[in-house]
Image (tube, rainbow, N blue to C red; front, side, top):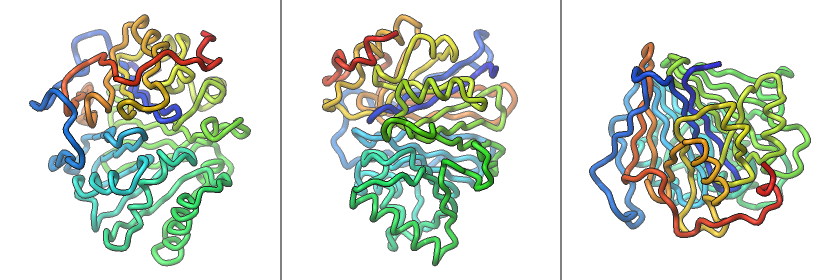
Length: 342
C-alpha cells in the first residue's frame, strides 16, 4: 500500500480529495495560503496561474467552478482535464488564466453525463480558442440532453478533422482491459479505469481515474466522478482498486473507506448555498471522527496540490482563501436513506 496518497472523488456535484502521508515530519503536506483572505471575491475574477511550467513537478488544480467539478492536471508538457464544470463562461475564464488557448490538451475525461461535469467542456472546442484535444474519454451512455449532444458532435467533428481519439471508458484501451495507462512527459501516470458495468444511475457509472506522481510514494490521487456507495463498494471489490473515493455528500463516504485510505486531507468541490445541502453534516462528522481536516472550493476557492516529482518530495496544498474545516451556508443533514447506514 502506498504510504502517501491523495484520493479524489465526486458525488452528485461534490468532488473530494483524500490525502495520506507518513507520520514522520519528512514529506508531510504543507498548507501555504495566498495572502488574500476573507469573503469570496465576486466573479468573474480568476487567479492567473503563471507558474504552471513544465518539468517533473505534478500540479493539480481543483478549480472553483461553483456547483460542479473541474480539475486541471499538469506534468511536464502533458496537460489533462477531468470534467469542465456547469457552464462554458466560467470554464472559459480558467482556460484563459491557465494560458491554454492555442495549446494541446493531451487527455480530457468526462466522468459521467451530468451537466455540472460536462457543460463547460464545450468551450474546449470553440474554433476561436484553437485548442487541440488528443484523447477524449467518456462512457458514451445514451443521454437526452441537447447540450451533451452538442459536445459529442464537436468531438466527432474533431475526430474527422484533427485526429482526436474518442474512447469509451467501458473499454478504455480498446483492447478489453479494464484499465488504460497514459504516461505523462514528466513521469506521472494516469490510470483510466472502467466504471461499474451495470450501475443503477449515471452517478454509479462514473469513470474512476488514478493519478500517480513521478515519485509514487509521495503522491497518488483518485478521482471517480459522482460515484455513490453502490459503485464505491464495487470499486473496493474490483481487482484493480484497493481504495475508492469519498465525497462531500454523505452517500459517498463511510468510516470503512476512511479506515482503508487513512487520509490526511479532504478537499470538496461545490458551490455555496447549493440546493443539495453539501457538505452534508453526516459526511463532516465522519471526517471529524476520523481526524481528517477538509478544504472546500466554495469557501477556500481554487485548491492547488503540488508534488515536486522527487524522491520523498511529498506535496503541498494551497488555497486562494484561508481556512480549514469550514462550514458553508447551505450545509445540512441529509435525509437520504443511504446516509443512515454506516
